Length: 359
Image (tube, rainbow, N blue to C red; front, side):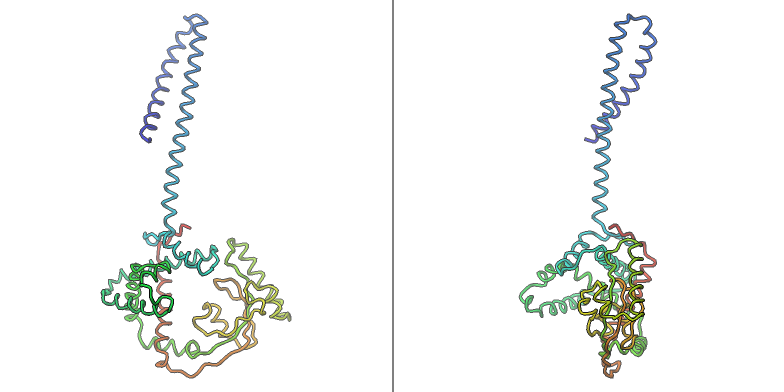
């Protein structure tokens, strides 16, 4: 089809060039011809011109259709990719797979949710690229051993006891090859961090953050202005202004419970913002937990920004932790601290990376 269009274009150009020469010769001889003959020739010329114009329109439409097809093809190719990380593509099929898992969990599919998924996939690629660059060897035996542990853990759930690992993973939107790739990456990263982090460093972290490991808990209430669906700077600025105004009302004597019931976007609003007890790590996002654990009972925080939006926090109770030594919780300290080191590593990788999000 494309060849035929090209040929038509060439022919059309050639006809216009020839026509121009013929018309010039005809005009030079017009004075020697009878009027009727001249009029007849003019009519023929008009018809020829009309046909040529129609051919131009047809060719123009064909060219437009051709360009449209090219555009659709480019759009399709771009649509298959949601991000590019240092030249490596993050494919939509992986993005959609993770979104489908969240949908099954009744997670609302907001722009914020989509970006969180893209960011996670991007981080996975960055970590994979990093450990590959470190030339850290991971044996098949090590991978197989970890996969067996994961299989044992998954099958400890009675509903999955009779299923194969393949069936379990597929039901979660994954596969054995994906699992092995993740295990390989995590093993390599662990080996790298083990060389970089000393036991003394972990002990120091424990000493400073003992309340994260001794079972200490606080009870809090909050007012939330949810920003996850907001897309413009004006909307975000409005949310910031609103939480500031609510804080002023509380500072001027307004009842916190009533403010939460009136303004909070969290489901806890009907309970006056109460979210019960939680520990320092693993229950709340870090920005929220860090502020809550730094407060005294009865104290109300300034507005706090988290991935969910803007919060005002009030600590209503506290349960002191028990006395523990580093040795008592060494495994937990190791897990938490290595996660922190991984996030620090990722921050550096993201800062240096060439990342293009195509959503």
